[in-house]
Amino acid sequence: MLKSLENKIIVITGASSGIGQEMAYQVASLGAKPILLARSEEKLINIVEEIKRRTSVQASLYRIDVTNHKQVREVFQKIRKDEGFVDILVNNAGFGVFDFFLDASLSDLKGMLDVNVLGLMACTKEVLPFMIEQNRGHIINIASQAGKIATPKSSGYAASKHAVLGFTNSLRMELKETNIVVSSVNPGPIKTNFFKIADKSGDYVNNAEKYMLEASDVAKKITRLMIKPKRELNLPWWMNMGSVLFHLSPTLFELVSLKYLNKK
Image (cartoon, rainbow, N blue to C red; front, top):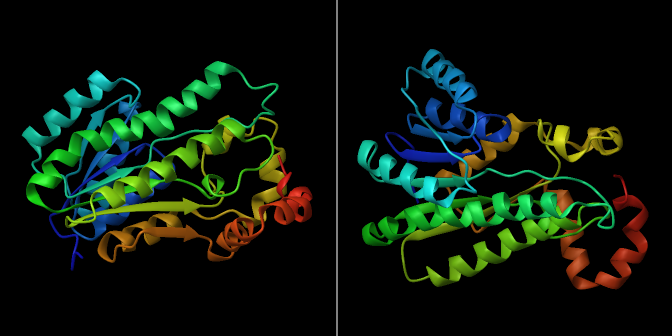
């Protein structure tokens, strides 16, 4: 357990917007050095400048496409050379597309698995040997409540987040005899640009907006998780009760709740 984030090196993928961007501000305000990774270098440059203005911390940025595993390796090698040991990796890069499976394109389905699952694994694979060598570190995988309860029109996205949770839980058990912490974060819907791609019709945002989390609040709780680690962070707490009930009685849960889950 860390007593402070002062001078810690924290790598955040998908840092150009949403909770990735908010996390960068939060950890910098606590004295950590955020290393920002995303495809949009221009957005990252603006965020690095804003971090400097707000906190005087000089963050670093690296352009990366997590689906390009050769590039992932090269970027993380450069991070090790330029920045040193990665104390915390936050695998935040991800996207979703909401479609009925019958209408979903295979390219969208593959894209979600490539980014949300294989990209996350590729980044983890680059930091893990060095964390094992140092016998310390924290890997935080941003999953979703969709990884616990699937809903209509999210078969591809839910499959990817179920995979993230399965990977996270397995990796945690593999590292049980080490001082490396592996956590999953399972948020419900968050007010971010995620839905510009995921929800082109706007139906889901209109139906669920009152339940949506603020990105800054989610980032604050993830930052707290870095200091006081635990296996899972479920947001909001009441939404996670649905997954508990689902696992107790999945048939009954689906029968009773389908009309409430069918918001897309």
